[in-house]
Image (cartoon, rainbow, N blue to C red; front, side, top):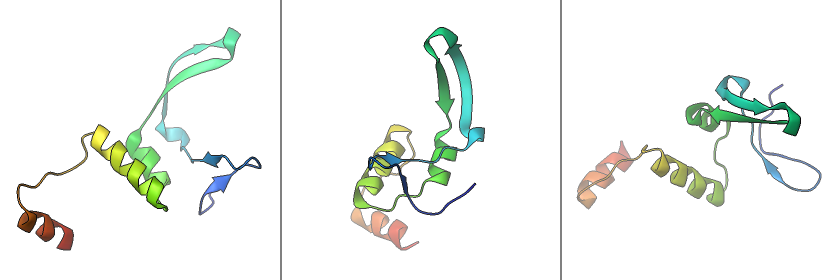
Length: 84
């Protein structure tokens, strides 16, 4: 089941789509009905494109935290990269 756009429940809480292939279960606690999973950042971002300014800023923070960014020493190099 694939839908375009953002999904919200009846309380207005924002939700993201996480492909099952992005999960890797680490451990579980059946008595507490909990499990610990890793989620692939690449799969998560491919399924959820940023659409609002807040989402774009949060995406930039996620990219920075995962080391997925470039630095430039002068404005000329930055402008050349933005135009490419």
